[in-house]
Length: 127
Image (cartoon, rainbow, N blue to C red):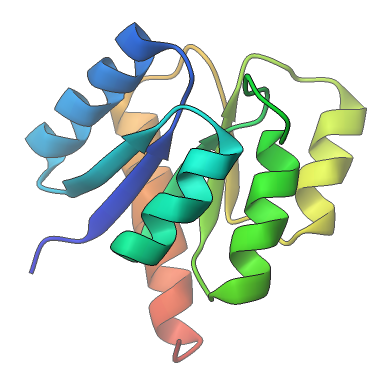
């Protein structure tokens, strides 16, 4: 079974690059969401096994707020993808028990390992 991943990224070119990389790794992208509100709707339409979330999104909701809302509704691991490496952002990601934090630009291998670890952790927890 291919694990299902939701990509939340407001830069279309980056989102499509991630989608292509995930397909090459054997994952199935359920959707690409460009805003927090769109991501919440996509999670309800087809719940993914994992969410890749940009921290800074266009629209009303940040990636952190969106991840909090997703985690409040469903036990879905969230890996943050961001160009921001300041301690405040890292601390915010830790508060919601995120499953990972990757700095852009990242290599496909780094992404694959982060996803593999997050899905393994979820499986081990019995969720």
